[in-house]
Amino acid sequence: MKRSWIAAVVFSLVSVVQSNVYAKDLPDFTELAEKQGPAVVNISITQSMRAENALPFPGMPGDEQMQEFFKRFGIPLPGQVPGQNGAPPQEYKTQSLGSGFIISSDGYILTNAHVVAEADEVIVKLSDKREFKAKIIGSDKRTDVALVKIEATGLPKVTTGDPAKLKVGEWVAAIGSPFGLENTMTAGIVSAKGRALPQENFVPFIQTDVAINPGNSGGPLFNLAGEVVGINSQIYSRSGGSMGLSFSIPIDVALDVSNQLKANGKVNRGWLGIVIQELTKELAESFGMKNTNGALVAAVEKSGPADKGGLEAGDVIIKFDGKPIVASSDLPRAVGAAKPGKTVAVEVLRKGSSKTLNITVGDMPSDPSEVTPSSKPAAKPEPNRIGLIVKEATPQQKKKLNGKNGLIVVEAQGAVAQAGVRRGDVILGLNNTEVQSLEQFNKQLAGFAAGKSVALLVLRGENTLYVPIKIPASK
Image (cartoon, rainbow, N blue to C red; front, side, top):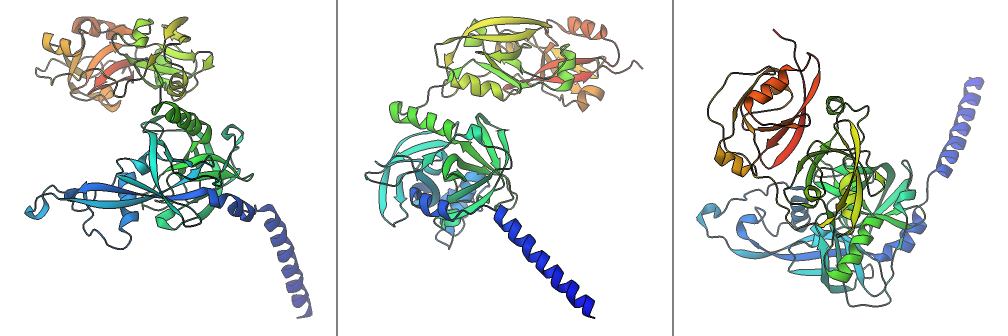
């Protein structure tokens, strides 16, 4: 009995010592909250909307936060039917909430573009409860950054840090207004850096497990030194709440955008006029490459900067203006950062050989044109070696393909269907060779050995991509 008592006391003492050791290893965010909290603001916007875009019960508790949630994360609003219940659509005012932070003491504030999008009125509320009507200086949808201004002086401002120095596993903290709860702090670690997200080609996102919820959008992400390293922009969630997957815009990207917005009211970006895709192992094999480094050019816009510079579909861009292109997501950032009008060296791999092109970077249009989609197929020829039933494009269809030849997919079977090719696709090329005719295409296919990987250049709708196909054994 005595031994058991002694053992219990020893165990308790060891537990206390271990707890103190672990506690010392945990960061203390109290100073950060006290010093940086006053520079974080709450942003509310008023927007005119038509009745069919309303929540089913406007004015219900939490309506503002729910509007922000639905708006940002693309969830259809309940009852979103034009002229619902036979009543004509009516306009009304709605509010949504977000966050921001002061970057200069004379009232310039950074937030997300989606927070202030289509706002009729923007109200900024400071931590001392003062409220100001803000002016939108400019916003950039491609990076989701906006710059707003309030008429005030002597304001507390944040200190910015260097996102390049962030390390995976490093502690970070966010301050914002989740669900309207002002100056809420949450903390976590950096989960990954340089994340590329769908439809977000110009931002190398910082991924964290910091609890970010609707209303945090536009708020700052701090390192332990109290420096802003990012703007909280997106979350991945199936529930609407935090699931440990949040994404922040690096502050250097945001500041570059805000400086251009302040000077010009818009952002000028470099542009090549190409469509690219990731280079997979199978595609690399089909092009005779030893690795998957680079960005594969799937399409080149006619008369665009890349076309004028000699870039071709099937080229693999491995270096742009001296910067190595390891993943395809590296290229849009490098091109976007290039000054329009600048001539840069672009190193490509073409048919197994390295080639350097000098391309004059264009100015990215607000809505760049893309290849026109093909018409629907009709007749049904016999399947070829890879299970593809195709027909040649008509003269009218060729006009829509900018004069190029194309094979319209009537049906896909076997290996080609498993690879994702489907009815209505247009085959524009095989490996680095453009399609000239059905006979030429099938003859080229016949020359490959069974088990060989080849790449089909496929047009689907307005997008082109390479699809790797492994030649099946003959029956």
